[in-house]
Image (cartoon, rainbow, N blue to C red):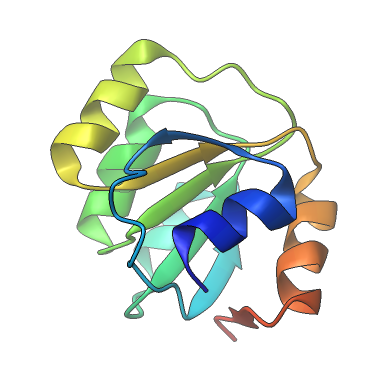
Length: 114
């Protein structure tokens, strides 16, 4: 699933990485526990989380996550946006709950990590 498709499905804003429009996400993982994210690795993985801080981007870097969706209408700090841009991570923000966002992506063909 491509960046623009994800944004459309979730009615999400792309805060960083819109120029990576050809990037393909193959699966998604939803968690607010960054320790769980650190134990996962998959090519083309999209992370859905409600944690709007720089540690989320640092964790994404370590786990080779290419995209992060901040759910629950959280305000994403500029420091987080800047770090995502520097790291080449696509960053989205959306109003939906994690449950709804996960369901919408699954319903539209994005596979779960497990």
